[in-house]
Image (tube, rainbow, N blue to C red):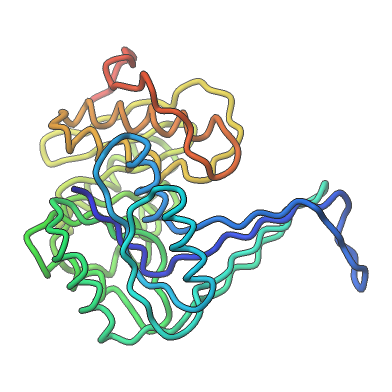
Length: 302
């Protein structure tokens, strides 16, 4: 079972306006959505779509936290979040004909003692893999993620920003930076695929067993001590890139949980991401017919 940990989840509030925002003017809209948000939650969402056993956990608080867990339940995404004082954050996106505006809250402050509560929740499910993904709430730092990684026999996977990735000190089975995060974590150039592979090898030297990096239009790489694999992105019409990296990780982990090879896992991850970017919004597209063997394009080995 793959358990995901989202320590700083959010309710994503999206508004669509027919005209531009103007100072002191009242803007009105009939189009607004509220969705559970957070990288770990997204990974669990896609794992459910791939028929892979998963549970999502982390911290929630206040009426927004209750809304988040209720929505996850209604969408049949198994979850067991720890309630804390404070309010789960609200991230607002305003879409106008001319521009996109984002206002993200920091979220609640979490005490260090709350980490053990999450660890106890993780232990109760006895997962094979734990995925810690997304930003940290105020009050926690890299030591909180290290504590999760050291607390049990599970493999720990991380998908966090570059500065946080470089601060981790425990042993990790896999990390999944994007191109920008890969550069921030290593201080190396990541303009070309070859440079990304080189930077990923630097992360291997820091204690990660495997590195999977999402490279946008360049597809993705999977780097281990034995070899480095690159698979280009599929040629699909892109409607929305939100969640692409989370979909890549979910597809890869799902295939790996079924005993698939590293190459098959990379193929499945890229295929799942291609399905996700082909639809707009936060819903889960159909993953029917997505087995890795349907992708017969060459995987480049470096």
